[in-house]
Image (cartoon, helix red, strand yellow):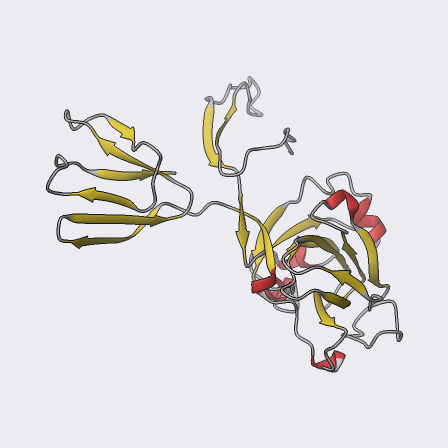
Length: 285
C-alpha cells in the first residue's frame, strides 16, 4: 500500500493515523486505531538517495520508468555517501540478507544534487550491471533533467569520451551551483551496481582510474536523526549546551511536570548559571 501526499515541509513533524482496518476472521474484527509520528527528511550534505523498486521485468530503464509505483512508491530507500550503489548491493544485492532473492529483477535510482567547486566543462561517466541511464538537470530542478549517458547492457566500466554512450559530452557547470542528478538502473540476475564519475576537461586522469563522485560534492534529502546531546561545556558562569539534528530543546517549568520550548530553539543554548533558575532540559524529535 502506498500513500501519496502533497509536499511535506522539510524537518516538520507529522502524524499518520490508520483506522477502520479489519482482519480476515470469519467475523472480521476492527483493529485498534494506531498513530505513528515522523519528521519529513531534511536536506543533508554528503549523501545520495537510493530508491529500490520490485519487481522490474523485463530488465530495462524504460520498464522501471513505466512501473506503477515509480517514482513515488519505492519499496524501500537508503542513502549512500558517494555515487556508487555498491555501498548497498556489495556488488550483488542477493548477498544482502535484507533482500535475498529480491536482489534480482529489480530497479533502483540514485539521486540528489551535485555541486561543483570549480567552474568548467565536465564529462560524466556511467558504469553499471545491468542497464542504466544518467540524467542531469540544467539547475536544481528535477523537472529539467535530461538524459546525458546510458549503458544499454552491462559492465563496460568508465570509458573515455567518444567510445560509447556511457560517457557524456562536455557539460558546463558553475562553481557553487547545485544540479539535480539521477541514475536509473535495473538488474536482471548475477552481479549488480551503478556508479557515476566526472572529470573536468583540464584533468588528464584516465577514465579507468576515476572513482565515483565523492561525498563532498553531493547532497540529498535524508531522514532526520534521533535527538542527541553532543556536549555540555561550562566556562565560569556560562554553560553551553549543544546537540545534533533537527530537534526542539524543551525546558521544564517550576512544577517539574510541564515542558515548554526554549524561545528561538537556539543551538547551542547558552545559560548564565549564576542568573538562571535551576532547570532540566530535553530534546524533542
